[in-house]
Length: 112
Image (cartoon, rainbow, N blue to C red; front, side, top):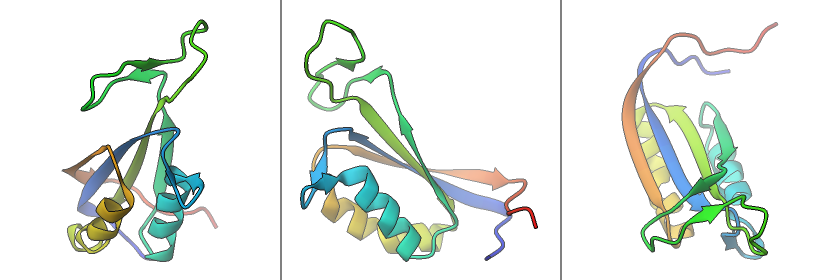
């Protein structure tokens, strides 16, 4: 396991739950990409509501038959590693948003 600490970068990828790539959920494709590129780790979060560039509101409201809930994938690693994978992420995405911000890693590691 690679050690990361101190100032790193948090990349957030905002997509829809129904977004796909080659018939598979896009969030799974991105998760596998991040793992294959050796990034420190990633987490997929499913939102209960949101809207994006097209201003369509997506919620878990019970009366809606179709749900395309927001999904956020968070990845923390070095600027260099994230910059290296960014072109592939952009190529896989249709609609969506990507943000990056500096974060301070306090602890990263697996228990023995």
